[in-house]
Amino acid sequence: MVVDGQAVCDDGVMLFSVLVEVSLRHGVADPQGATIERSLPHLGFDGVRDVRVGKSIRFQIDAADGASARAEVDDLCRRFLTNPVIEDATTSLTALDPATA
Image (cartoon, rainbow, N blue to C red; front, side, top):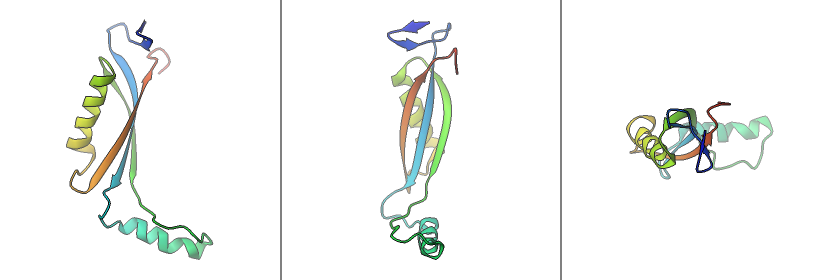
Protein backbone atom coordinates (compact mmCIF):
# COMPACT_ATOMS: atom_id res chain seq x y z
CA MET A 1 0.00 0.00 0.00
CA VAL A 2 1.22 3.55 -0.73
CA VAL A 3 0.31 6.52 1.49
CA ASP A 4 1.52 10.01 0.58
CA GLY A 5 4.06 8.51 -1.80
CA GLN A 6 5.51 6.20 0.89
CA ALA A 7 5.21 2.42 0.99
CA VAL A 8 3.30 1.27 4.05
CA CYS A 9 2.66 -2.26 5.35
CA ASP A 10 -0.92 -3.45 5.65
CA ASP A 11 -0.74 -2.75 9.40
CA GLY A 12 0.05 0.95 8.73
CA VAL A 13 3.72 0.68 9.67
CA MET A 14 6.52 1.93 7.42
CA LEU A 15 9.90 0.25 7.09
CA PHE A 16 13.10 2.31 7.10
CA SER A 17 16.70 1.46 6.33
CA VAL A 18 18.98 3.20 8.81
CA LEU A 19 22.67 4.04 8.62
CA VAL A 20 24.36 5.37 11.77
CA GLU A 21 27.94 6.60 11.46
CA VAL A 22 29.67 7.04 14.80
CA SER A 23 32.85 9.09 15.12
CA LEU A 24 34.95 10.44 17.93
CA ARG A 25 34.33 14.07 18.78
CA HIS A 26 36.97 16.58 17.71
CA GLY A 27 39.64 16.87 20.36
CA VAL A 28 39.24 13.26 21.52
CA ALA A 29 42.39 11.22 20.96
CA ASP A 30 42.08 8.53 18.28
CA PRO A 31 44.86 5.99 18.88
CA GLN A 32 43.57 3.66 16.15
CA GLY A 33 43.59 6.46 13.61
CA ALA A 34 47.08 7.52 14.69
CA THR A 35 48.39 3.95 14.33
CA ILE A 36 46.91 3.63 10.84
CA GLU A 37 48.30 7.02 9.82
CA ARG A 38 51.81 6.11 11.00
CA SER A 39 51.68 2.77 9.14
CA LEU A 40 50.50 4.05 5.77
CA PRO A 41 53.83 5.54 4.54
CA HIS A 42 55.54 2.19 5.23
CA LEU A 43 52.99 0.59 2.91
CA GLY A 44 53.58 3.11 0.15
CA PHE A 45 50.63 5.41 0.88
CA ASP A 46 52.19 8.83 1.25
CA GLY A 47 50.25 12.04 1.78
CA VAL A 48 47.44 10.54 3.89
CA ARG A 49 46.71 12.51 7.05
CA ASP A 50 44.07 13.22 9.67
CA VAL A 51 43.02 9.56 9.84
CA ARG A 52 40.04 8.99 12.17
CA VAL A 53 38.45 5.64 12.91
CA GLY A 54 34.73 5.25 13.54
CA LYS A 55 32.02 2.69 13.15
CA SER A 56 29.10 2.22 10.82
CA ILE A 57 25.89 0.55 12.01
CA ARG A 58 23.13 -0.49 9.59
CA PHE A 59 19.69 -1.81 10.47
CA GLN A 60 16.01 -1.61 9.57
CA ILE A 61 13.29 -0.16 11.77
CA ASP A 62 9.49 -0.11 11.69
CA ALA A 63 7.76 3.19 12.46
CA ALA A 64 4.51 4.99 11.80
CA ASP A 65 6.26 7.71 9.77
CA GLY A 66 9.62 9.32 9.09
CA ALA A 67 9.49 11.64 12.11
CA SER A 68 8.77 8.72 14.47
CA ALA A 69 11.59 6.69 12.93
CA ARG A 70 14.02 9.60 13.26
CA ALA A 71 13.05 10.17 16.92
CA GLU A 72 13.51 6.49 17.76
CA VAL A 73 16.88 6.29 16.00
CA ASP A 74 18.09 9.45 17.75
CA ASP A 75 17.05 8.00 21.12
CA LEU A 76 18.75 4.69 20.26
CA CYS A 77 21.96 6.54 19.42
CA ARG A 78 21.92 8.55 22.65
CA ARG A 79 21.09 5.61 24.91
CA PHE A 80 22.89 2.68 23.32
CA LEU A 81 24.88 3.08 20.11
CA THR A 82 27.20 5.91 21.16
CA ASN A 83 29.05 7.22 24.15
CA PRO A 84 27.70 10.78 24.04
CA VAL A 85 30.64 12.07 26.09
CA ILE A 86 33.22 11.26 23.40
CA GLU A 87 31.28 10.28 20.25
CA ASP A 88 28.97 11.93 17.72
CA ALA A 89 26.57 10.16 15.40
CA THR A 90 25.18 11.09 12.01
CA THR A 91 22.16 9.19 10.77
CA SER A 92 20.40 8.67 7.49
CA LEU A 93 17.01 7.03 7.03
CA THR A 94 15.50 5.76 3.80
CA ALA A 95 11.93 4.55 3.51
CA LEU A 96 11.79 1.03 2.07
CA ASP A 97 9.09 -0.78 0.18
CA PRO A 98 8.04 -3.51 2.63
CA ALA A 99 7.12 -5.80 -0.28
CA THR A 100 10.74 -5.89 -1.48
CA ALA A 101 12.62 -5.49 1.81
